[in-house]
Length: 155
Image: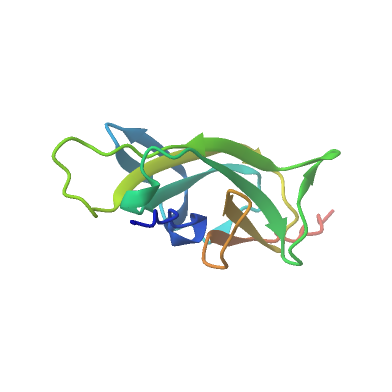
């Protein structure tokens, strides 16, 4: 009797995550402007999270809930008022016609965020989790510059 194998879990999903000035998805391709940000500010500026997920063949047509949350350098959620800064969504990879069995399935996501007012001199990370699971490499970290010191005015 054939034993049915359970599909691989979310940790088997390959993730490439990049912080950028902006990003968009068109025809399944990821377009990135100003990719590779690692330092922003000191003024608030919009940022984008560009994601490429590589789903195993056996995860096709299976919906996956994802969450990206902004964490401070201590791993604590960054708040906007009384709410944590986070984005949620759902992704499902389909098998394209003609794909060879076993071929990983790529999914592109672009999340553009409004200008973030964050404290200068600090480090932050956008952390991805899929189905409540995460991995240390599923993050995009960045620092915020300190505001320039005010020069005393001479009279």
